[in-house]
Image (cartoon, rainbow, N blue to C red; front, side, top):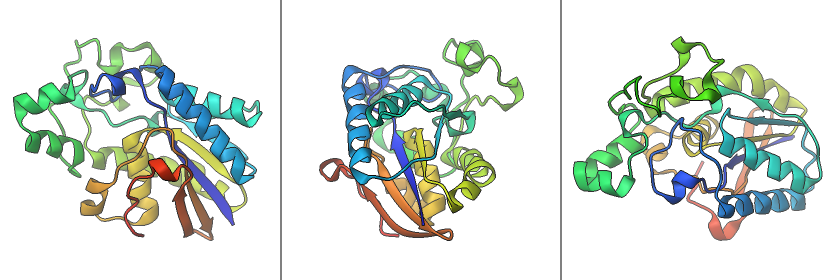
Length: 236
């Protein structure tokens, strides 16, 4: 029996400003830091002995994990992987979500945000928000850096990483992943065997650890530790 704990980073600066963030590398707000600290405290109450830690390349996920580790009293290295990055929102990147709904309509924005395989228009490579212009990604080969992604695209890179780097370790180790709303949604689709309609309804709250109990590749239990801030997991 092993445990996989998934944590969406605490509230980021652009979460607060209601902007499409994607691959833009913004940090946590003060509230986000508190959410990360609370996540660490909640994980501590489980008495789960964690062995391995993973995060995306992005600051908000990295700092969430660092705060969790500090709260747990652990000084451990963690693996950073671009495959766990947030979904790239293409030309929507940096736009205010409320203003975009007024401009494009709620139905169209919902389609961009929640559909399985719809990509927004690509972000121009001259745009300062494009990943090729952000220092965080300077060591990534340019050919793997996206200009836009659908949830399906995100799913494919996240699940490939999980199957190649994480899954085998869950046979005898407990693992914590600090990532993002869409990368965690993608992983939940895979683990909980959700269909495309179910995944469109799945919400992932910031800074609330999702504990998944796994026995021989089978999900035995799945729950959020902060019940007051739990979202609908969709019955699995």
